[in-house]
Image 1 (cartoon, rainbow, N blue to C red):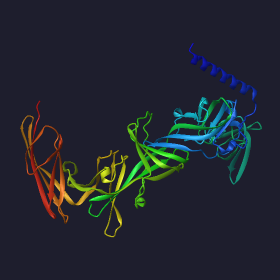
Image 2: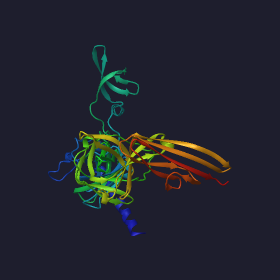
Image 3: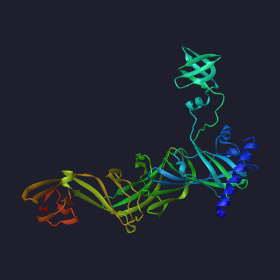
Image 4: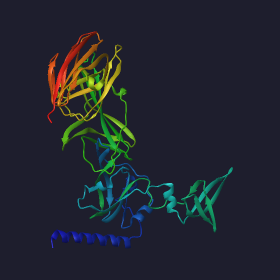
Length: 497
């Protein structure tokens, strides 16, 4: 037989004998520690050689603060938590009640490590989420004595008896009389039943080769933590450059806080197996965030096929908290305002867009996580006004960004089909006229987009065009101040059957 298999069987037999001997011989729940080590200062509880029921029966005071931690938050409403805590273990099998974990924990993802003694390992793990509630306590008190107060008219009457049922009101056996109470105002219990918890808890059986204090790390995935990027762009007076600021917004609804934690953010679409699609989105406004440029606080690196942003200092993220941290800041990025007319899709509306490059030479050059870009411009009083917003996808370095901010007020378009001819089967001719009107005090350039489909051929055109793809062309039309401009073209389609 393989020596490794023999060794493994031997370890299992030793562990079983140790656990059995402890359960038989040890009648007292213990949480031993080295001198000056207070068990109530850490968020766990340890017992040696007793079953879980005995562990729960012991009284546990409020847990203390966590140790250091690291969280990696993905922009898909989940996070990887690395929780580092000091723990004292006895030699042999220890029952550990590990509290103050995220309520959205995926118990199947938990990985425990003893960073001090590599031989320590988890024999068994239970995820306990039988939390304290009125019905849970009543369930534990069936056939036990409780005291119930009931409002009867202007008086409050008290009944004491053995609890028989609570599904449809309280039913008591009080000195041989069966009393049914439907409107109890207060119920008194002698104590909190064992086995109930105030918070989700991991319960481990941990084997340690030797007693001592050690540093442990618990790693798990949880939902309830999310992040997104939000951006603010401030356009200059001439619409030729902009200041660009990025913010990260971390939202923690995971059920626990993360004090003094190292924060990392992953941007990308990570594949996960889920029973139900998680949809999570909240909207926040950032008008108060506009101001002086902030120093870049996140380091960026590639991680597999995603991008990882690491905060270069520790931070605290409390439960039910939304935290904003500056991601990047760049000034005077060259940009271009464009007027775009797509008459087939937008009728008379001419879209206004801002275009700039995410390149280092332009002042950026960092991979940008997807997020909303809100654009502002100063008015004649020097006050910032909101002029539009758009959402960008994950954007690589050197890629061009295009922001659709709204429709122009003083520029309109009109698209008319002036001729339609079915020459023969599969052979068609069409003619179009695009008219643009500009009521602004200065001349502008309008990009006219035409989506032609397939198998097309332009037979005549009043001005040159650019072929942007197999089915799209663009005309660049100069429209004079307080004036108009027209584009006409004819197109043929031939389909072979």
